Image (cartoon, rainbow, N blue to C red; front, side):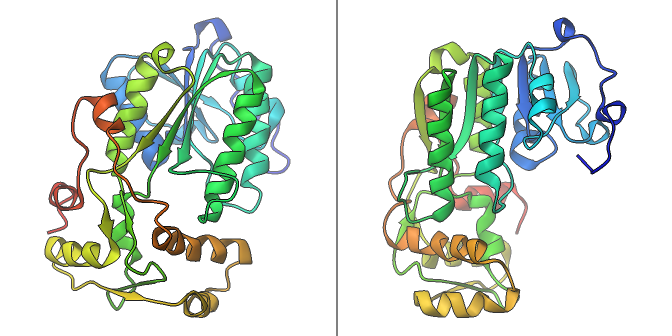
Length: 300
């Protein structure tokens, strides 16, 4: 919310709480939340779309936009009144992301939300190598302590992101060594989330580790990207020191550079490896691999 914005600007002219859907979805103007919202709409499930700007909310049948934000506890609490099940997409990467997560979780508990479904990270722990995974773990712990029912969707790295790792020269650089990861498509994660939200009581207290069908190294990913995109992609294994040096020119804050580099060191350490059956268990279909994803995405 912009500084000086009045309550009249917040979209308070909305249906009464009783008329609003009891299922709330965050992130519907983004990629993952947008996919989830569309799947739910196609299934005929009414939903409350929590958005910062109601004008940007997707126009979906049965969906009612309500202005909200993670960082404004008062507005968040108001927007969550009457919500029974909440889909909480993790906020954009930022130095204060954990604090905004905590504020929103506390607002949800204060508003009487019964069940929160949170998009976490594969192998999240207090000391995992991927630095942002630690924030996800802390958010999980805050949710557990809140007293709300919960379901955690621990997503592996997105296959969708792999084509973007290559620089202008077609080289993926990072200290991943020969490590592998069970990367998953955003679409498979969205289908899993929609399955949980469609029947949340079945999934209370469950943590799902969402992966693709196989472990893949960045060397192999580069080969498949070359075949699937028509662009020559290669992988260059850096040392950790080289990784920090090659990213110094971006002028990014230290926490962000740490996150970038630990993306690769987490792979090297084996913390992203190990396909699971959770996508198939939740959706009834096998998860997509990189080759099929590239074909479907028309990257040829």
